[in-house]
Amino acid sequence: SGKTFEVWLRADGKADGTHNESMKHGTWAEEGGAAVIHWSTGWTTRIVKDGQGYSKTAYKPGTTPADKPTNSSDAKRIGAPGAEAGKK
Image (cartoon, rainbow, N blue to C red; front, side, top):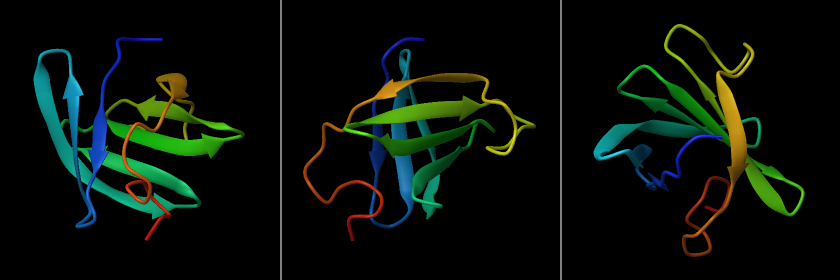
């Protein structure tokens, strides 16, 4: 597992996130029950409900969620109800 980061999924399909000391920006869509974020850095993050919690997988540039994840970790929702994918 890496360092903690936060992701904001906006209703307009844009995503923002913190990574170390910088901000990341991208777009997101619901794909197969998961929020899939395509960052401007070329990385892709997939967040999916996993039992009572959530899990996050990340894919380096040049790979896709069909490939083996570059890294994975637990995730948790800290936003208001209705703020994540699938709550429209």
